[in-house]
Image 1: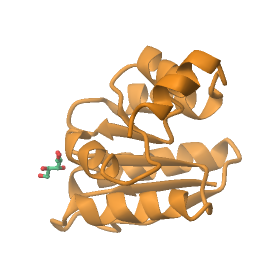
Image 2 (image 1 turned 90 degrees about the horizontal axis):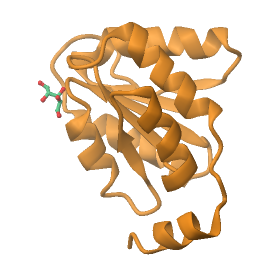
Image 3 (image 1 turned 135 degrees about the vertical axis):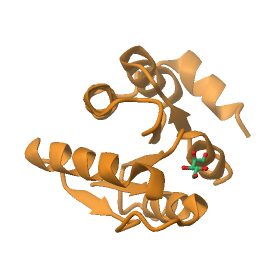
Length: 141
Ligand code: RB5
């Protein structure tokens, strides 16, 4: 299952991503927000990271205006490796090299077409399991 959350700045993008993932056959847990009223993105970052640290979801996606606040908030949580991506290469590489478990994107910086391609690269790429990458990830904390 993939958890997804947004703030008011990325509500439309979140819905596009949910539709895309569901059409591809993924189970999606939508933690909100559920409209475009101004809200606090760390609330939704916490809801997505809770879904991952509890074991309910394997991966998460967080979208806000820039993706920056979401990535900062998510990376405060032990066990979360959140990657802010604006291109497909980074989305694939961060799964292979960093075993990223949360993808962050900005709805005001990344158009919806590219955002869906980034999502596909992220969810379709497994961690390499390479010893050197495991060693480096273990050095994060
Ligand atoms: C909300 O206006 C905006 O600050 C938020 O969406 C995000 O860009 C924060 O990093």
